[in-house]
Length: 392
Ligand SMILES: C[S@@+](CC[C@H](N)C(=O)[O-])C[C@H]1O[C@@H](n2cnc3c(N)ncnc32)[C@H](O)[C@@H]1O
Image: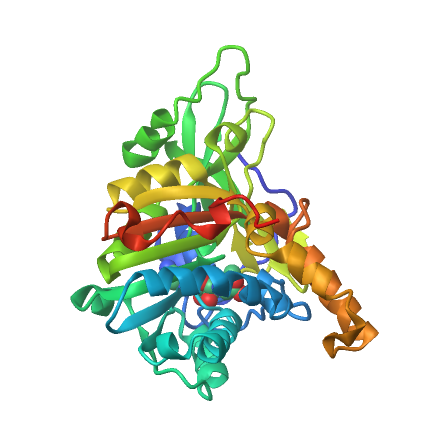
């Protein structure tokens, strides 16, 4: 079955790979290549730019407000770990803005904590790591780039952040033809164009994962041609992260949906989107290696994988709620004060940035997921501040 129409030409490097693979590969392999190939991948080569003037914006790329609110939670989590060396681990730091802002805030507001804090960056894509090094070099905190294997050999105590990282892991695309589930593939068409096609019947882990979601409903059957995503990269990622953190918290912030909303028959083509130059496209085959490809996470599979991978699930909420609990209302109120030192234009811009972070139709709908390892109960401090009621 062919899903794509008017397919685009295929770049030579991808043509070679697909021919070597027999003409078709699982969508997951294609996504991995076009994002993470060190020469041709959008992240691997470092060509994607993150920020309001780049290919897409993320919360920390909009300015310091996000880090200013988040740092209250980080400070609390780090202090609860008691004496000894600590680490702030950021995985997938992108341009490095969040690490940079948090390190500056911790050094200024928690100097005793910062004095025993190391910044650890886990970034598999050499092109991105190069830019992070340039931005972070002047920071007062010791810093190192590492990988999961090295971190597992000497696990740290501290806080680990994964901000919009898990949505960049390659997904398995699946489709329903009215009678069976198939793996979606990317194939070469007759003119060496790229096509999305139905591949072999779904089996093994993918079928098991789908069945474990217990989504079947005789009242709402999936329409023929319905397709969606599974997330084979999430469980190994969580297991790697657990092996690298001896004690502390992991905060995952990302687009995510409950399984019943993700796999509803009405969501006919999943959540996969391509981003470039602040534009979104539903076509993942467009100009391969030049667009970001991203898919929502499934909260239910993530929770199961986290628990199986050695994490305690502390809870989850929307970014809007999390930032309110961390003092967003007070920050907005403070901007009304003409004596705050900032001029009117600056205060209006700050207000705009804060409101964008909690926009329920945008970043405010992102999920904040809190996980922990080591310690027990109150041993790692009280319930995360952002999962409590706002201060008022
Ligand atoms: C969407 S960007 C997010 C950047 C940044 N955290 C932000 O929010 O601005 C995804 C980042 O994750 C990195 N990445 C991709 N796969 C990864 C993996 N398996 N482990 C760690 N980082 C990864 C990418 O290279 C990139 O730096």
